[in-house]
Length: 320
Length: 311
Image (cartoon, rainbow over all chains, first blue to last red):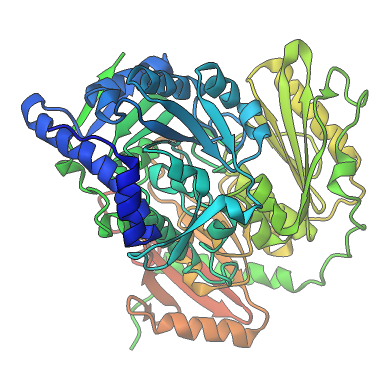
């Protein structure tokens, strides 16, 4: 059976469910359709849940990681409109997604037959120019879609039915024009949370003003504020389901996150998969953190977003 | 009836509380008026070999989130006024990012400096305090904390970091001392570069074993690491915290609230023994408006710990 994207029918169904259901349904359907096929084939070909590739050529590592998962065609159907979400927080070393990884992903999407690949952001263009990510995106034939963060009309209000702390998100409007989301975070330290990876990166699709609500009003004195923030991150992830996550774990900061400068760790790894909980649980161990200490991972697991027990995750590692 | 108190734990906390007496000294004189962070950024022709490469970026108040989204909380917690940032180009096209944060007061700037420096780097002769790590320099002077980040790791870039840092520090009129609470921490046994000055939960959550003092909700705290063997197995390190409340009543209230915690117990010396979220033993003792907290010290494979046994 083939899983064919029909954005119009999904949109119609989505409108009947409400915007939150649309968002979750549309992307999770797309992802689950692919995932279901992938799981089926996995039993025959022993494909991993998590692919970890280490090497000095970061583009090659990204390509190999996706290959181990079955290839980009598993995640990007022909004719799909693909949204990619790298991190371009600052051009300090170890703070932004490697342009080499982004280039590789855009190339793989195009090779898989994507109709278009768009990099979505509400960050200023300067961040993308300074990091070299604007050049990487544009030179590979993708488009950098700059969303005015201060224009509320560029964000769509989305209910979060399963949200325990976050009841409504504000997702950038451009996101809804796409069939597939590929999440491209860099893993690194984060002030307060200690860790950022696939789960937190999705805040890059949510409006900055809504992201600010992830903080309690009394966050400067309330010790529970960080847990509230982490719960909001997990809640946001219940309405956005990437088809694929590739984490840049090549060179990243392990102090003074998320914008640095900080102590750099060079693990030279690209980590790929669809299970955000499993990926983040692995990535945080790269610099000695424990998944059990990262609240967002625990809350996302409680939402049923993934597997936090590494013993139940099939990880394949390869050195180039 | 209370549990027997550990000699080591009592010694640590008592030493801290005696040191806290120094905090009753009158506050330092008010710092000079702020000049604005942007005015401190070197202009063209100021630093030999290094020239501005773009316009000055400036953000004030809550707009800090626009500049360092996800990282603004730490600065806002201490009291943030404005940041000015600019890129510089040097020999062979090398690049350095300069960011100067103007904080509400010198203590706030020192706090950010202490947390952001962490253990990394070597002391550098720039400003009131500075730390040079592999590719970046962090400087504190008066109400300003600045970071200078090289986008490559070369000797020329490291020289440039210091040169630009000195140019910035030279433009700052004041030279306020570090907060009294931070300097009150006993020097004996203190690990180098381990002092942290804290004004809220974000900073506390970013230092070793900081979760242990989050529930105390102290508006001001200083911390440092003691003991340990260094090298590969710092087996018996202890983190000491000196918490300060506005008055003795507030400290007493916090102490009683913590005493009511399910994992806390009052020992025979009147101190509070507890287990931290990371399962490290701790002990706290109050005197006046101060509370001293010692956390850690568990040896690998033994029960030796600050709240449990003699060292």
